[in-house]
Length: 266
Image 1 (cartoon, rainbow, N blue to C red):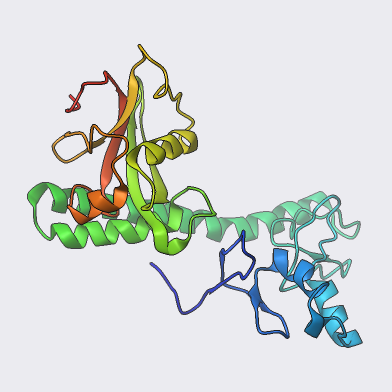
Image 2 (image 1 turned 180 degrees about the vertical axis):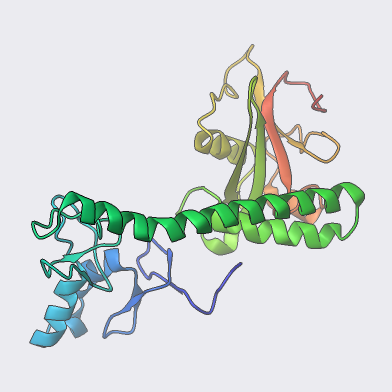
């Protein structure tokens, strides 16, 4: 589920990630914790900070675990050694005040709820996947099923982070491997051609791409619903395919190796 009112987008040009705990500079710009510190060093309005403000910024980036560079927004203090740790190393620290049994018990105490949450989430996700598939197969509430799938894809899709969020189009890409079928949520730019999108998807899925080689099978995208090829022309723009309802944002597509003249995946 998307929560657009709770997160803010980092102002760093090459980042633009959504952060639920953003930091705001005195100049009014919003940054993730990673880019905030680099910005305030050069920002004119933040060059003259008070000692309390400087101390607050310094505390954000401290993790006492050896070798960890994680920046901490909300400090987590060890009750015994009084050192601050990030969430990942909260119960793995080399605190001399704790014996191995105590550390193991604390790790299990905090790991158990997370394990239970992951198990419950996996069960709900599986049930939701089945409901979406059932709705699509029966043609019942198909549009709603696509919208629900699109929201889920946005939370886990992989792709080039440099693509503006307004230009992203999402697909649930299925690659029918010889032994195990693999499904991956990806996003590409709707400003690209189909050929550029296939190249990007192949890179994200780590697939051998021979589309620029003669006498080799080609990677092509097919509709899961009907198994028809999206387009035989690699120069076709995704925007045109969207406008003509050839493809739909958030739908299932199959990527596989076929002969150059293949128009239907069997």
